[in-house]
Length: 341
Image 1 (cartoon, rainbow, N blue to C red):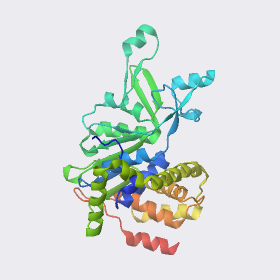
Image 2: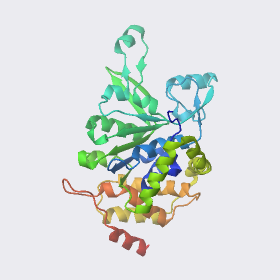
Image 3: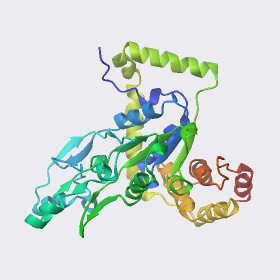
Image 4: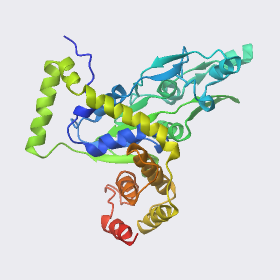
């Protein structure tokens, strides 16, 4: 019999950094996505699909191809804006889903296409939605992202950062909301991503198989139990799933109220200077991540510990490195800065 139940997110053994990075991006998609590096069989795709299933249903506009939020008037597509003006927006309950982007995808397949001939003949825009349209308010999952064309990766990261996808052809343009959680996974042995693109990912973590016998045994037991009776297995984690889902939703609501002290802003700036991180994206992302960590913990103010946790997720892949070398974060420098705080 085919299993229809998704493996529970809370049943995944270990991989705490990966789970936290995914949760933070779901709370705050403005973080810019997460790149997960690691060997095969480390629950990367399982965690992504499990997280989408974990979250409670959200409200979306009925028959909207972009799944617009009827309560968010600032991020509506053109059709929903017109309906909003007329007072004809009708909402419905929709579940967050995982939209997968194949490695062979072309730019047109990703961003969508404009029918120029129709525009000239009829004087109106005709847009054929791409993958980004379906990804709005969902998780966009790209396995083996290092094998994707660099230009397509650039387009994805632009849309993830701006929250908008704009298609321009022959002087005609069309824009629609594209606020999604970008998750890219890759095996470093199969090639790397250019440093310029790597820096655009908000968070990056490296995963590996469990090295403790007890942990590996637990992974095996849970997987066998799930395959034997997925319904029974899912029911065991039902309460934990609901509690985590509610915690994430509460963090989303709390996030706009979270504040950070100027002394911590200075700490982040000094951290970037000492580590010789290029540009300002790292500073901003550390701060955004720290704000999100505080919200996830149910607090309205950021602490130095939030900054430290954020640095572990944000800085390693932004460290200067030589070709074919991994970025290495000097924790001694960070520890010294925190002790001086």
